[in-house]
Length: 252
Image (cartoon, rainbow, N blue to C red):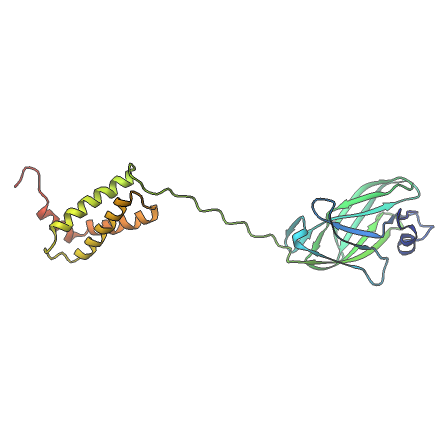
C-alpha cells in the first residue's frame, strides 16, 4: 500500500484502502511556474464527488499551441512496499495529456513526480492515475480552469531595415546634384517660353535646392523627388524647348 507522507490519513481515506497494493498520491496536486518552485496553485486530489478547482492563466504556461497549454505539474507518491517500473498517467476531459513511466518506489520514501500536461483552454476535468497498468490503480481527481485561448502568440514583426540617407559623395547624390544644376538652367532659360509644366519645373527646382542645402535626404524622399524631376526631364515638350537653348559644342 502507498500513503501520503505528510497527509497519510487523508490520502488513505480519499485515494485507497489499507489493503490496496497500489500507490497513493499526496493530497496536494501542484501547478508551478517555469522556475520550478513558485506555486501557481495547489489543491487536494479527491477520489470522486465534488472536485476541488484550480484557476491558472495562459501567461503561466510553459507553452501554448492549438488550444492547449503546457504546465509544470508535480505531485508526490509513496509506497509501503517496493514497486518497480510503474506508470502514471494524467487525463484531461478523458484525453491522455501526460505520462510518466519506469517509476521505481521504495518503501516509505516519497517520490515527487514532475510532468508537463497539455491542458485545454477553459475547464479541464483532470484525472491522475497511479500505477496505471496494475490491477488496482489509484485514481485522484481535480478540476483545472485555464484562463486564455492557449494559442501561440503571433511572431513579433521584424524591424524594418534601416536605409541610410542619401548624402554628398554617393552616386545617388551626384545624380541629384546634376539634376539640380540642370533644373536651375532650365528655370532660367524656359521662363516666358510657354512651357506648359513650367510651374512644376520651378517647384522641383526649389525642392532640389532645399535638399542640396540640407546636404542630406532620406532615401524614400530622394526617390520621390527624382521621380518628379525625371518626369519633367523626359517630357518631349521639355526636351524640345531645351534643345533650342542648350548650346551645342562647335555651333553658335
